[in-house]
Image (tube, rainbow, N blue to C red):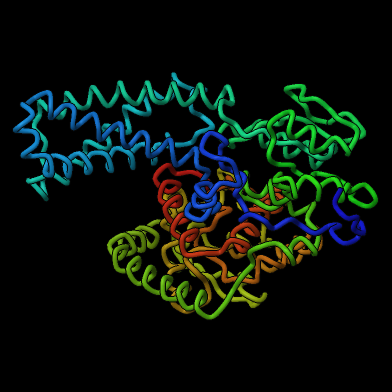
Length: 500
């Protein structure tokens, strides 16, 4: 038996064995203790589970294979071998364009794989149609990349068949939880219920609930996982059910944390994961209402330093200068249309709260009539009557945000970060939402993790949900995450989502 330890030693402190998000690995590849598994953790970190990456790369490989098979079918092996390099580069171009088209049509959302096939087929057709238009432009600029009409249509047919088959297979695997990693949930209360809800709601999480350990029946147990009431059975339950991870999801740990049993399991190779950390990994957000200061203090992340600051600042300057230059024609046309539609200034300056709680004036194209807030500040509404016709369009396309790149150049904002809020709303939200002021520990952004993960909201509850994503961003701040947010923002803009 392991030595006894005081219950206060580990109480309320998270287990930091793995990087946040590591629990998203599927059991089909390796056990959490293997070298290959740890290497995948290092490479992928926490932004995308392996199942998403496998699905994307697998589909890309099939598209590439279909094109090369079409080339091979239309010629003999000696000829194909001679032109293999050129044909490969053409196939890579088509693969990249088609996959980007599928992404921007939201066809890499694994929550929908296999569940809405009737809706996916027309969207796949539209995605490939858009991809063909892009390829037409590429072929005009680089004629050497052109694929013959016969090869293209033969490969297009093969691509459609391969993709449909791949998606049906992958959807079946996700829905039936094949190769999912079984976990044991220590706890049966509200925290455990929220974790179970996320696991069951995300077919691609790579997990399934094998059992609960607790004194009361679980609040949420859709698949009737067995309940064990004796903590001494923890290791035996894990071995019996093949579970190599225990998620500690106790609502109240005082006097109820079986530390000796957990330590014994850990020494036997079972991973022990704090419930809030596990939840963070599979959702990309932090449970604001359940974390305590100790978790925030001792958890991995929330790092800052001069090198990180310098890289982010240089990236912001480069992106804003390039963005202002590229968007100059759009800026001139928008300014003219605003001036022609309604009297008043072209730009709208509004006070917002920035880094360290300092106020600044955010610059936007004016999208409302003059004196739109003469009766005081209010949340933006759907079909807001204050918005002009031009304003509705530039809001929907996010053109009204372009001038904020001047705020980025001035150092008041960043390209990516929590969206800055107005002082009157900040004062109210600080009183009602825990840790709300933490979002002011970094520069606010033109776009952010919350904006690409959560729809537009105009209530206090929405502010709380967005804070969960904002804290995740601040905790995991990196250049890679910034570029991921920017990439997702392009899709949001093209699909005209989340604006009012």
